[in-house]
Length: 145
Image (cartoon, rainbow, N blue to C red):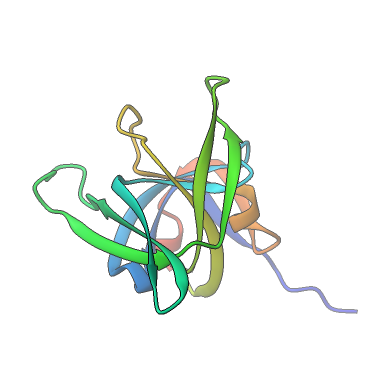
């Protein structure tokens, strides 16, 4: 039996979310977080062609808050999530494709206010799955390939 060698990623990586038109988004890889979470503003639930959707704004460049990308996606789920500070909140969950290094797959992302955090997105262990090993001493390993 042969097993695929898992790629190594660091504690910080750069991803692309093509359906949200976001490229080179710096994320903090967090094996302590079950689901990935993304900082967004102006979350609005609505219906489109019979589907329950969510629209939201995000600022993909932390150094330029004037750069706003407006997105919309079907609501995949609504979940109660407990944050690292112990508070619990209900969040919309979207499922969207992600590109990291040479890998492409779909992940679940919760939408929330992360304005007090250093990185706009946490890349959680469900997204990491069985594809990667995390080396916390390294950063931006996937962009070095």
